[in-house]
Length: 388
Image (tube, rainbow, N blue to C red; front, top):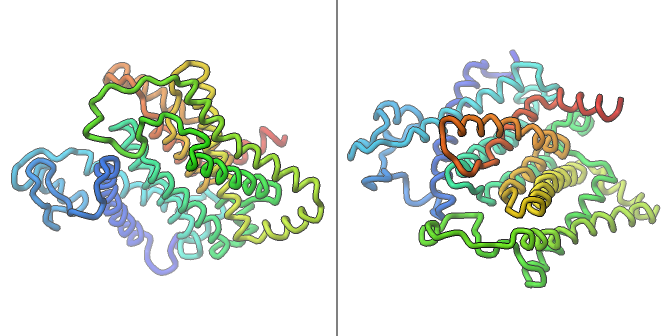
């Protein structure tokens, strides 16, 4: 009996479907309230039209929408089908990830659900659920709340550090279940972290300036959302971001030079950084920096080349968060396959919808999911390409 040592798989799947539907219901709250700077917990759910509080029996995920035929019980106003779509999609995703990991052999090394596999499942389903909310917000408002990305990043850092309590470190490294860093990668991550802290301090003190100071990437403002956008010299704004990134690059270079020039420090660092918890933490941190770097480099180079903002900072942090959960190589591959999904959507919009801007967050999320599921095939392909 695969996947569960006590309960039949059918019961586990039904339970996960129900939990996923409930999480999807909460994601609907996040999608509507977070970008509007509203509390996620108070007040309770209410009809957007008549403001009548929704009773608990009308707030059952999926079922209530179907029983009410997609309308408010009191005012009969149509309720957006987005609600049931998000709930159903999230529920199916919870089930799909369980089936793929614990009912098939697509991903090796995961083990049984109750034999540590639940921890990998938990961290990755947190990421996927958060990315559903981020993608829905991006599709509607063309922004990705950075708080969602930071939440996933924190989950990745904590999960990678604690993974050694659920898996043997050699299994983690062999199958790439969680990011884990070698001593050299760890010193690069440590140097980048020192550089990031330096950049944030310089930004906080006003020594370096933030780019696009008039824009808010975290929420929409009802008082200003209908005003014409400010005109920026986009290349100048990108120069500010290059200046912000310089301490991070310098931190990596300095840390690596110290590691290579000082054998005594190198020996101490190897012993310290290869403690399993520390190696996992630095592996996740390096994945975060690589995920951010590949999108940020595209954003900067694209803006310099075309004179307009190429990608949003939300995309940068989204890929950084994915890197913290999956590690550096998977997010690099995900970044390069995401445009294929974007092109498919662009062709769809060309014939069926009129959209001047195509949000990229959903396609990055799809690329991340595909690479996550096909992790073993992707890593085998990378080894064939680079080490043949």
